[in-house]
Length: 97
Image 1 (cartoon, rainbow, N blue to C red):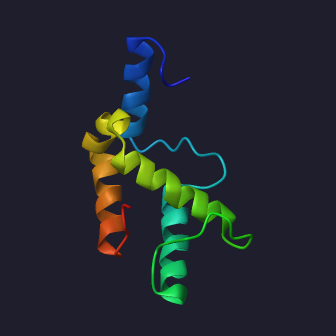
Image 2: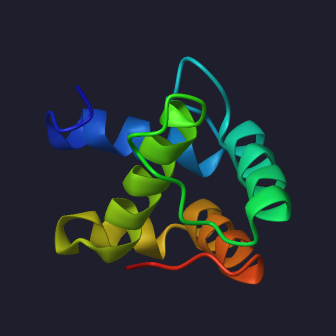
């Protein structure tokens, strides 16, 4: 949906700039807080994706790495909202690899 014509892409970008969350199940901040609790309990942010208990968080961590590391997400990496989010992750010792 977000990869449509330029006008539509611009509308999506404006919504994201306002902080609109595309995730239906939980907000970014809720997942971030969950990750902080995980780190507090385990001493790191390397959440396994095969863990039954932390499956959703593990997938979210994988997506965050993908958003940060992949060339196709360069526009996202320049977005002020996502820059702040990446900085929050880095502040808690998040590893991008």
